[in-house]
Image 1 (cartoon, rainbow, N blue to C red):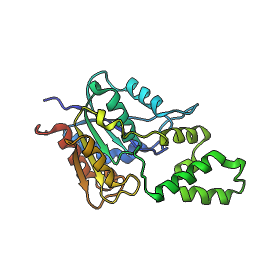
Image 2: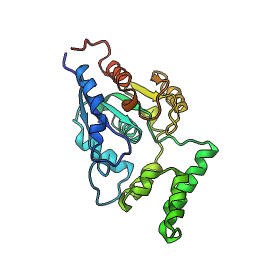
Image 3: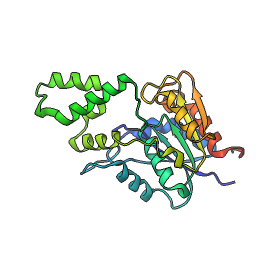
Image 4: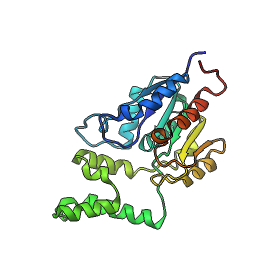
Length: 238
């Protein structure tokens, strides 16, 4: 039986070497019988001339995926984008696999303070914060190091993406959903799995107990096994 096509959306990591970081997982998936295609996300793997929104990323994804059902995997921001795409294009996603997806706001007091600090800094910028050390301290409080290092175009893009939430998209997903989540994830809390299970009771939750936000790097074999099971199911791997 022909192996299904799997397309991968990585997280928010502005790095031309993103694919190299994923190569061990890509190799294990290929050995297991899948044909993974690593997608290079505009602005993260390539340059952007103007700021994008989540909708713009969704349109980009629609233009690069085949016009047929495929398995779609997304990590962090890639998961946020994959959820939005699967909800709006149900006939083009046969299987949705999410690794610690972003786009669900943490309503705890700590995270409310973090978001408030981040958006104040993002709005005021150097017009008010002239001392570089003071600026670094505020960015550290917000823990948005990617924002600090980004170009103005990517700072605006990041603000656009962070402002988008995908909770209301989840119930509109019609494809099977597999969640792969590190129990010690501090970036996208493990408790977010409950939102998926409540909205889509058939969701498969695959927990990696001692992993954090990126189990595809720290627990590659376990992550690959979960992905292979989700996409291939009972098919016999070569």
